[in-house]
Amino acid sequence: MPKIVDAEARRAEIVDAVFRIIAVDGLERASLREVADEAGLAVGSVRHYFAGSEAMLRFAFATVVDRIVVRLTAALPAIGASGRGTAARHEAVLTLLGEFLPLDEERAVEACVWMAFKNAARIRPYLAAEGDRSHREVAAVVGQVITALVSDDVDGQQSLIVEAERLLAMLDGLCMHALLQPGWMTAQMCRDVLDRHVRSLAG
Image 1 (cartoon, rainbow, N blue to C red):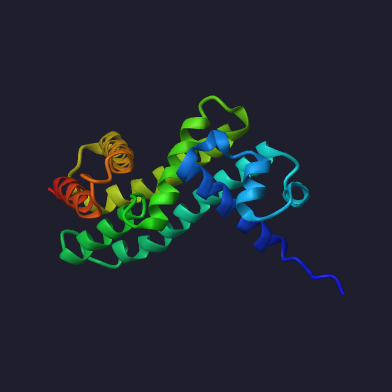
Image 2 (cartoon, rainbow, N blue to C red):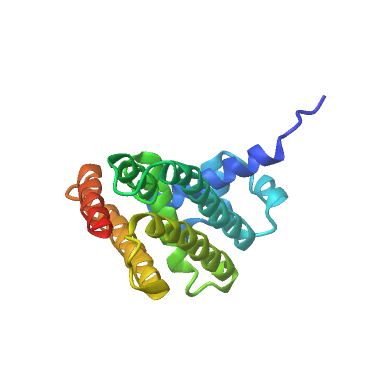
């Protein structure tokens, strides 16, 4: 009797192989053949789930976006459950924002993949829609964090938007710095920088 293959599990194996290749050698090496070799599959098996490399990479990009957004969304209730200005809220915000950063091996791989895809979306039209979605969904979460942090007398909606964009830019820069200089920008250093920025937002 032929073995039944779980399609969702097989796609996840393929995506994990894409992630490993990108983290080590970059997006350019993530071809169908290279991914098949990394996953221990025949190229035909990968083609069974993805018509070509564009479909495979688009799915991989969507997967890393979904994984990050799911973790961010799961961390949001803890911010709302704590009072403004409390140590509990501060810690909840640091926990949520830490999901963006390469603070452990899993998040380091995802951060590397996230950055590679975001950069590639500028010049690869088939990734553009996911690139836009990734920004919108992350910005929506960051906007809620800003609303929870800043004082009630903040000067209007425009100031909230500016603060959200400032936080997003800080997170992108910190993430990139940590990926490029891991010996200096350790997990603790990332957390210290994040802690200082969050305290400045909370006034």
